[in-house]
Image (spheres, rainbow, N blue to C red):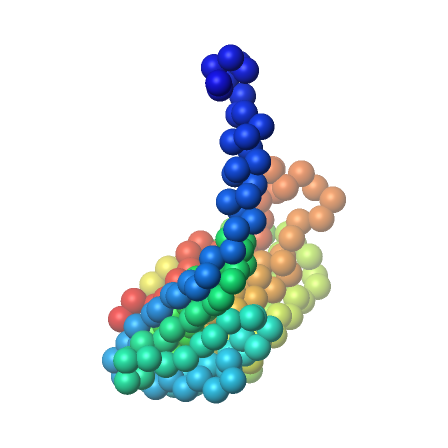
Length: 210
């Protein structure tokens, strides 16, 4: 029994657990509802979504799953046969990706970044119609840091909050990557970063509230 072996799992239970993880599920299905006012088309695992903020396209050809529109185009279904538990996780991931496409074309995603400085005020200047950000006076350095937003992403200064930038776009990945480029352009080198906290940090992110 488990008690006689000092609470350790018996070899029988361990082998049974590993067998369970190796067992294949016959058929697994995940679904996601299509919001109102959003058009979606799926052809050969290429998903195209259109809403009031434009259209987005995403390719899922690299995944061994079935993707189709059900319920008269009101639902997206993803199905997989004979998969192990680790592989089944991709079904939910695909649904999450498609859900992000819906949010992007309906509401847009926004990342709010705060300019943090102890002594030298960081000077952020938006040029090129919100497509390029110029950062000056970071730690008093003379160099001008230029960050180009990725396609379809715009940057603006927050109207209500001082020292805040707002990066927005329909594609969650491009928007998040643009915010990361801004953050990574202002990293403190050769100092203790617990003490030198200057930089541009993502304060919050998500779909825009209507």
